[in-house]
View 1 (cartoon, helix red, strand yellow):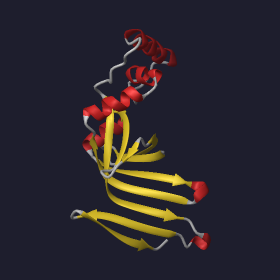
View 2 (cartoon, one colour):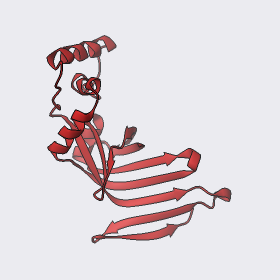
View 3 (cartoon, helix red, strand yellow):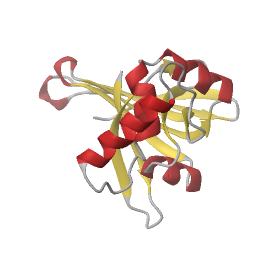
View 4 (cartoon, rainbow, N blue to C red):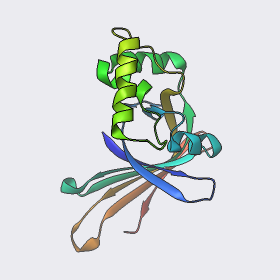
Length: 167
């Protein structure tokens, strides 16, 4: 379920990081994160993203281009409550992507929030899910002599069309 997410910053520089996919539906791909993180801010400005799933031992790759939108708050709430207690407290403790004074300051914030929320940890308002609605999906299967199989599916005018691509 690991994938790379690529976003673009305000200077048009791409940023890529590895995340965990939590759901695939008919609508698209769902993941969760801090809305105030670098990726959250970048997706707010430019909702066009790319996902890449790669399985080197299988010589397979799936590339996705799509448009991202936040999921319903109820979906974010339900997923947040399914997470382990320490992960829920950690979402409050970490001001993701901000500069830390020290590791000790992060641990102190964690301790403060674990005391504030000894049992029930509500979802922070700045944390939740995103749905990537795919516009293009490419499947790649490695083959000998670099004669790989590539298939592209493009969503346009309410339907998917497919093409075989040269390796």
